[in-house]
Image (tube, rainbow, N blue to C red; front, side, top):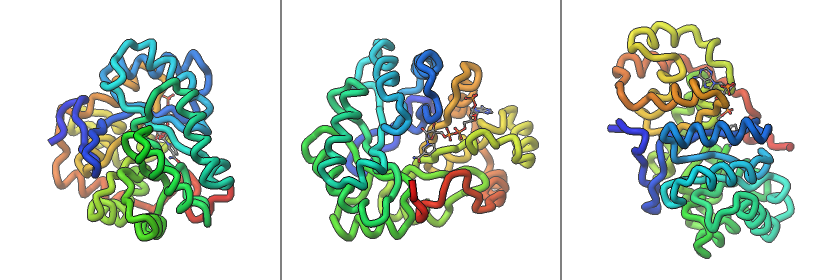
Length: 278
Ligand code: NDP
């Protein structure tokens, strides 16, 4: 039962990762970023999800340091971008070093391959394994990996990713991938859990939300938690950052869980991972 903002899931290497984190994609204005990260940390979030390509690692690192919260109480995720992946193994190692410097951290909690670049992601995975073995990162994982990508890196290296961060929301419930990951001990993390701002288009959530005295956003995030999925909603507004964290004090019934599951349309707002041409 997940009933506190401080609750964590234990990843397949024993590392504990919070169920809730703040996403900071598209938060590039320094004042806005600073406000969002500090507000989230004050509200009890312990996890921040950034990426080299978001261009805001420096700001995240600064806000985290200024919060005064001890480093070991925080969980920082960043990701290697496709450009470095295309250049190969050494470039991935260099990209990691750049991210670590920008964040101003001694170690990263979770380092992810951002997208599976065809013909390159096995090599990138080998670089992440080196970073892990060198003790520079507490856990390594992937993002936007389909089952065939996961199978390939596992078969090639024998190392199972700790996390797969994928687009996941009521219109893309990813049931098959979630089942595969559960079976193999890979923790699923939902990105764009609030459909990158399209949540209000899902009219069916309003009735369910009313029933629980919660908002549609809280219903969706709780639905994720009850499926055993980590969530990283993004907001730059204090009320919403707090709203998105008030998901630990209620339970959605099995019937309503099924009702939300049935909204699936296999609709993606981001590209299909087999078409990475960026
Ligand atoms: P989300 O699904 O989290 O939705 C964010 C949008 O919803 C914003 O427009 C935000 O507006 C709005 N919003 C936030 N809270 C609420 C609320 N309670 N009620 C109504 N609207 C709300 O979008 P993201 O696509 O940003 O995904 C979250 C995070 O996932 C990213 O920030 C990033 O860290 C990660 N991600 C990873 C990807 C990958 O390839 N690995 C790809 C995409 C995202 P406002 O800010 O104005 O409040």
